[in-house]
Image (cartoon, rainbow, N blue to C red; front, side):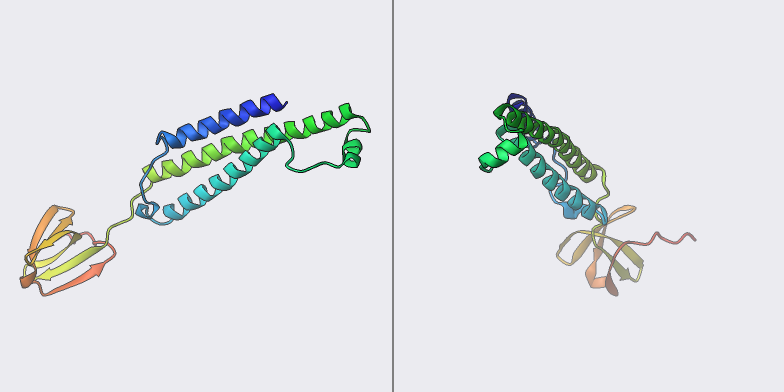
Length: 183
């Protein structure tokens, strides 16, 4: 039983180390780049993966190396029916249970990590703040790309637009640009 537990512990540990170490699980570098509520969901998934992985590691270590506590002779005899062989069998059964649960939780941890990273890959990006500039020629709305020498360049639905701020009548921050009204 101990040999099987050691093999599973090493195998699952190598799998998780490989996934993380080789950068297979790499999405956006900042969860804050995701739109709400995807950012919160990814955070919860990562927390669940951490708790699940830690629990799996503890169970696999328990199965591989036994309980991290000294066992009194009285307790040893109580679990084994008074014989050393019976006590060893009872401990082997407990180790097998810990091994089974640990393997399931380790695979669940992997699934949670893959789901969280998949959401960072395919989840919608958070919208950049936009500004609306009012000029005598009309209002223009978009995301600020750059500003230099009194000229503001916006990314709009129709492409990049450069506006002279000295001719602007007003400017305001908006959450998103409303589509232009059709004539």
